[in-house]
Image 1 (cartoon, rainbow, N blue to C red):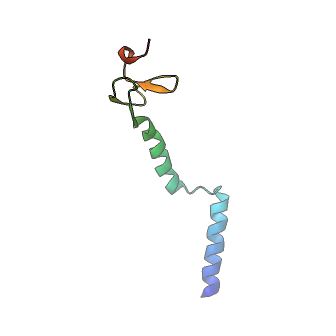
Image 2 (image 1 turned 90 degrees about the horizontal axis):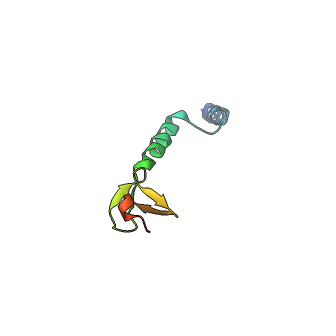
Image 3 (image 1 turned 30 degrees about the vertical axis):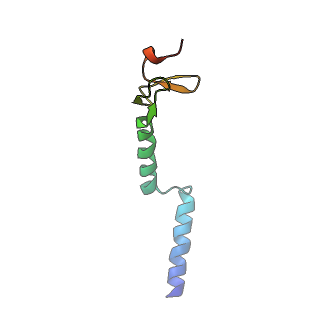
Length: 72
């Protein structure tokens, strides 16, 4: 009984290594987290309005909500 369990563990480790340490079932969760990273809200440096990273304007590392809030 113990030898069968040990054999399954060894086979599981070999399969895990053959996949490069990446299990496709768990990688899909990482991909969905990466795609939603652009939906993160950031605060405008001038007025304090929250906008998504995609919609913000970045100048010198600071996020702005519109051209009106950009520094002169």
